[in-house]
Length: 88
Image (cartoon, rainbow, N blue to C red; front, top):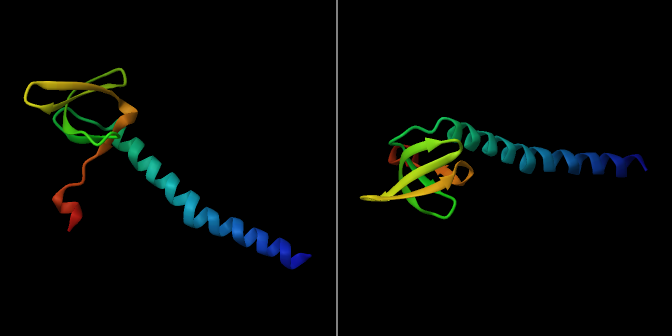
């Protein structure tokens, strides 16, 4: 009986350290990025649209995707764009 409880606790610990904790860390990084958005910053949306931030107003982010084409997105749909320095 004691070994089955130990196995159960071990499985829970493995799930926490290899699945739950890294996901929480990733979500925190994304939230910090969204809170620090600045005009002119390059972003990608959850739909895969790349562009530059043109305006931020009450949780709505206006992104210029082409010259003169501005699309409005909810802040939760914005993700960071990896730079070439990060890829190295």
